[in-house]
Image 1 (tube, one colour):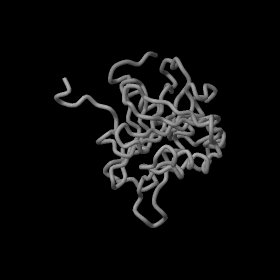
Image 2 (cartoon, one colour):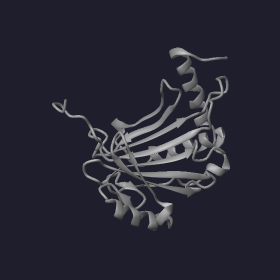
Image 3 (tube, one colour):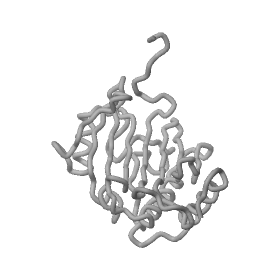
Image 4 (tube, one colour):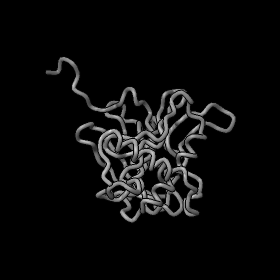
Length: 223
């Protein structure tokens, strides 16, 4: 049965919610990759990913990558977003979640500040085409449980939001400083929906200042 329009999106959403609610496979019953945050007993603060903290320079993040993953030199790939004019350091990490296969971690540095403003972790897709739909759902469920218990501000948290493109915002939430975490699952179809063209993709993003992105913008009066 082909699903289309708002009723179709609602049906897909509820079908995916049912999948997310099911017990995880044994391979996915492992701790999630941590965001950097506050110590136990303190108010939760999203400060970055592992030992790479927001506000760090590229050299500092390279040192953090070496500490966290023992990667350096050519294994840390530098690139640029030509539109936003941000700089990016990208690494490939095996089994960031146990059994997840290769994943990609991208560290994004702001256009103006040249500091770390965003970290995105990608499972599946072109990074790991072998990631199966059941595994992607398991890892989404695992991360959802981790994030909902991390201490994000309750009035900012939203879960399982179906998007027009067929993806699902599994989690979105801010800390007290309005730093944001977003977890998105794409390329996964409900049992009675058409099979997606590509492999599933699970993407976890930590953002320093979602209200004021540090990217190149054409300002008023420039033209």
